[in-house]
Length: 427
Ligand code: LMR
Image (cartoon, rainbow, N blue to C red):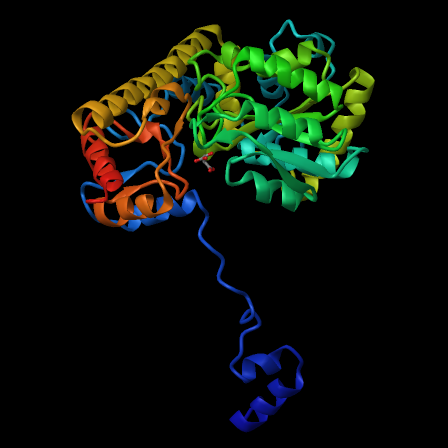
């Protein structure tokens, strides 16, 4: 066909007209902002300075700054290889043994819903996937409200997850800037003034991003308010074991609520406590009134999951299940979780000492030691975090959150010195 004739044919055929005119179908798509957390890793990767430090994403690093594959995970993988497991599809709600063991880990084997077989649980694409399934389930079936209250601040992905699930997102007070602690009075007042039966998201432990958790006594008060206002509690437990080093202590809030008769939703992640980040292993569960209702809820969870991703990946669930079901691996894993938590706690002490005693950094830094879990909410301002990235090659989220796991004996002094300079305004 001659070039002129070809142009005419193109011009006559709908969508092709645009291409003939040199305009793409996607020319109207605006560039989106980088992800507030994962975008930090991209900026870090692009930086070629040897002193660079990534304290952005919450991913554990060992004492040499290297990703850490747990010994229990390596042994579980060997056992899986030796068992010649096939690669068949999992059922829609995942590996049944794994989900049962995940529920046991969270709720405790003596809890009423676990004993009564009334927990509807599905494997999920880690914690994010669990929250997304939960959001979709609540948007479709929770009869009383389409509003979910999140703590302010909360993990950066919570708002988009729930908004994309079809819920309206509102906030309740959580962080007190003055004390760099929990705004417990503000939190209670906001929960009390939320419309009855609203959904409320609670970080079960190691609050992300602040590292500030309510005490057991405060949890008891929160549980009473949730009961009085008939709010629906949705727990996000992404760090079980990472806060205190003990998986059962970190499940205290969830277990307390359940023991008080609350029906709850729960998102679990095995990314942090088993170091299974890229394997995407998690679970979503709901407590129901009994096996009959559980079966109905299960059937609807399947209807939500099937068009999203059909069924979950196998390998990570096999690893987690092998650890959860073999007593010797379970014991080793518990020791390793404790070891990770303790290394982070030791970094907190060192950072506090260095900021206050070595570098005489202006301000109060006690929160570095009192916060728990993977993160510390330093109180550094967005201009300070920007300066730290640009001038010292130190990366963290703009809100001043640092992943304590990114600090080690080799970089903590450089970090403290740079923070101190940033605070004094002479970086
Ligand atoms: C974080 O907060 O850094 C982690 O939960 C990782 C993520 O996906 O954001």
